Length: 322
Image (cartoon, rainbow, N blue to C red; front, side, top):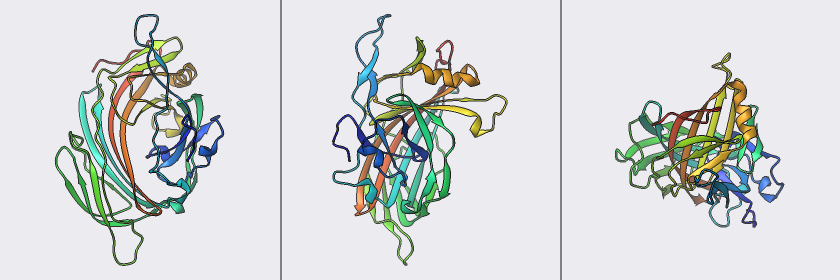
């Protein structure tokens, strides 16, 4: 772990597992955190928050402290070889006003993972362009657990039973409610690869409200009703219209910021997105995370996610009203 409060090593759930530390980031001890794990260490410096004023009287986005997502006290990321993740995701499409959600469970031995992740070219301390595609040489080894139960869901608890590697639930209109989500699992017997017994509670988080966009100079400002999640992830994607199904023909920008209600995506990132046209997909994700250590080299994480999807006109800076 890094002692500096301005630069912390953070463990980030998938899909950040396939991304490298940001290109051009300050070289610090945090850059040495393991990239083998499903919760890859990513280092941040400063996040843009809200405060002050703007020329038009609106509250301006200014620099504030970075969101901190750290491992339990005293944990060396290099020592983690086994990881379990419960990710509960509630999605809302602002274009269609339709919502649905699901949950995913993952149990893996990450010591066997080897690969080359995509890189992030920073345009600001918290926003970067995803460059290239990840290459997986050796996948992590799937672990088997039994008696898996997910609780705190809007529709009530779900007894999943045995899981080997990954389990994805069927979608339903609502998965996140007012109660914290939690998972229980027991180590499999019989001598196979398994994960230690785990019984942990996470949290929950609320839906985005009041999402708006506008151009401020060359930057794209995104606003939402502030919350108390651990962080907000902003994803913007444009696709080459002549290659609509080719994942290598898209430009993607990722930002991780405080859940304080505003962020400005830098002008160079907006210009890069505009190469493929004036319309960009926009996704905001509000993450509430918790982690625990069920064994000396094992890490378990619960991630409650509220997702808001829309589109944005990169020239006008507008997005459709929900």
